[in-house]
Length: 370
Ligand code: UDP
Image (tube, rainbow, N blue to C red):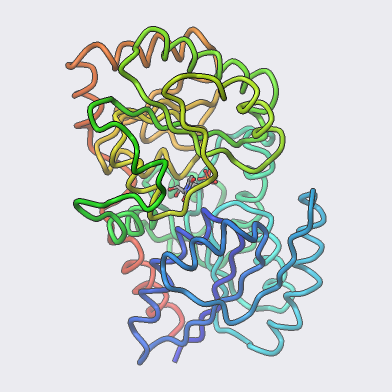
C-alpha cells in the first residue's frame, strides 16, 4: 500500500487535485489516500469539496482576515509537521503555485518525506508576475521529488532547471479531468439570477482577481466592458465578483448600474462550469479558466500582460489582451462581429489535456513508490 497525503488549500488547487484524489480512492488495493486541507481560502475551498464529494481527513483551518502570504506560510510550517510525523506518508502531493503548495512541500522536505508536484513547470520567467505564484512554483520544483508537467513546454522548463528527466512525467492538466467529470448536458442553474439569463442574448463571462490587476488595470477592464455593452446591446455579462475588497469595491462602483450586467457572488464549480458552457466569450485573468474554457469551445481573452500559459495563445484558443481598454474592445469586438474569427478560436484544439491526466499521475506514483 502506498500512503499518499494530498495537501491543498484554495479553490483552484482543490479543483485540480479532486480528480487525482478520486483516482487514488478508486484504487484502494494500491493506495491509501489521505486529504489534509490548509483552508487558505475557507469558503471557496469548501464549495469545491462539496461539489466533488470529498472530505478532509485533517484541516489546518488556518485562514484569518487579511492574511499575508508570509502568515499563511508560517501557519502551514507550524501546523503541518506534527501531522506529517503522525501520518508518515510515502509521498505528499501538492498542486500548483500557492503558499500552501510551497510551504507543504517544504515541510515534507524537512521531515525527509518525498513530495510530488501536480501542474509543475509553469513559468513566466518574471519573479514578480504572477506574484507570489511564480516564486512558489520555482521553489516547489526545487523541493519536489516527482513532477507532473501538464504540457511539453512545462516539461522543458523543468529539464532546463536541472530536474532529472526520469523525475518528470508529462500528464496533461488535471483541470480538464475535473471539467469533463463535471459538465452535464441540459444543466439548469440553481441560482435564480443565472436561471433568469436571457437565452436569446450572447453571454460574456468575466473573471478577474489577480493582484497585478488591482487599481488602474481593473478600472480599464471595467471601462472596456462598458464600451462593449454600449456597442453590442444584445450582450449580457456575468461577473462572479471575487471577495477581495480591492476587486469588489472597484467592479461594484464601476459596473453596478450597467444594463445586462450580472455582478454575482462567486459561484460553486458546478455552476461556473455551466456558465462557461453557456458563454459566447470569456474574459479572464484566471489561470484555470484559460485552460478550461477551450475544452468547451469558448474563446478566451486573457486580461494579463504576460501568461505562464503560452500554449493556449500558440494553439489559438486564447489571445492576450492585457488590461488596455482599447485593445480589449478591439479584440472582443472582432470576435463578436466576425463569425470567421470566432470559429477559428472556438474550434482550435485545447493544448492542456485530454481528461486523462489523473490516471497518468496515479500510474507514475504506483511505479515510483510501490
Ligand atoms: N471558478 C469557480 N467559481 C467562480 C469562478 C471560478 O468555481 O465563481 C473556478 C474555475 O472553473 C477555475 C478556478 O475556479 O477552475 C479558477 O480559480 P481562480 O481564478 O481563483 O484561480 P487561478 O486559476 O487563477 O489560479
